[in-house]
Image 1 (tube, rainbow, N blue to C red):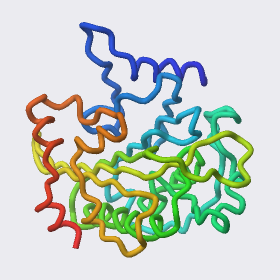
Image 2: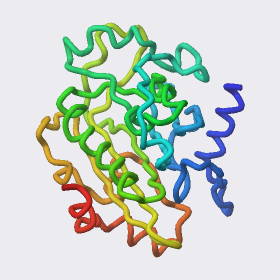
Image 3: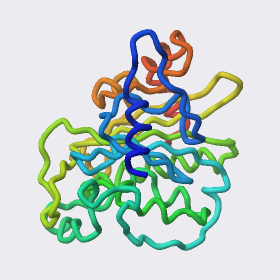
Length: 266
């Protein structure tokens, strides 16, 4: 199974001259999957999110998910029971014990990419606690602007919108201290990006993009983290929304959409 998954990802990350990129039909993708992850990555598609796991860093290069009222509105009281990813070999991912002592020595918390709180009405919410979906995040970031943005995304659904798409992932722009008790070589992110897409009609949508550094303050505003999708692509090395019409893609990715975001996030 692992070899099949890696073959799929190789197809996802390889473009042959004169041929278009393959279309992967998955409910979690909007405008195409995030393109550009290493061919050695593992593509994993769970029921509530999809991700591309990096063998070198031991974390996902991107996570993509779609939210509706069925996932967001409710409370099933699920707990955070951390588990290793069953589709990855032991040397490709971390275990729960690797995070031992990380909060005390480095102020790292287990940061969800697809957040548990956004799937609290799903019987499959426990999938968010798989360590392939987790990265070390500084406490002030995790409990500050990061969770504020996650709350704001859920509010889009609670306000009556049918669906919202999210793509998120790490940045590696400077060296960060490793997890002190981890026995696998890994690479802690220096920051994170998130892109939010809200369909608003046939062939139209609102978009927002954010970059949050690990040094972010607990009281930092989400608005202060707004960037363009072009900036996310430049710094992550990924190509997003590439299945859209070129003119539409270029216009949307250059536009921060500041007015709409400020009306959405108070």
